[in-house]
Length: 215
Figure 1 (cartoon, one colour):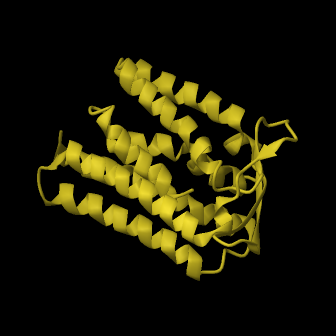
Figure 2: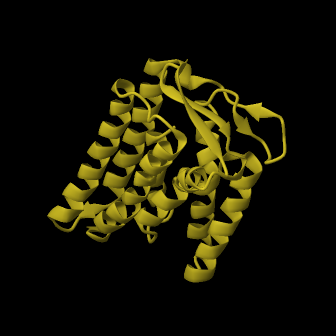
């Protein structure tokens, strides 16, 4: 899942009103933000596989340190704990930690059975939603739309930046998502990794936009 993670970040603003949208975005996408770093370092592995799944042409052959259930829970506790130490806001820390773990749960219905339960487990799970392009589009756009709508209700723009930075970021996300259906996948692992590093750009973008909006 891609857009759904951002949708959950937007929607969680309702529960953590004092937390930056940039922080919520970082937490919701942390597993995918860590993943390209591990790819480039050669710790985890992926390969282009056109035709493997209708809505995703990547074979996630080895990514236990970014996408196993156990590691997702560990990262959830660590990142939520760090946030609590810095902000002393237990509710917001729980939201941030839950967003980290939510990434794996949202990936579960989309992936084929390639999500490991632990780094050393041979058991892998996934419900295969990416086998259907219509289902993928409905789920991704539906969750994103719900989250952005909730965010728009919970906040109001203070100036043009607060409006255009948010909507510009959302449009860019949707454009990237839709372009994946028309573009061939990158040719090798490092190209995939460097391309996926672009996800980091949405953290400062949405943090900047959120500073120009009021509850």
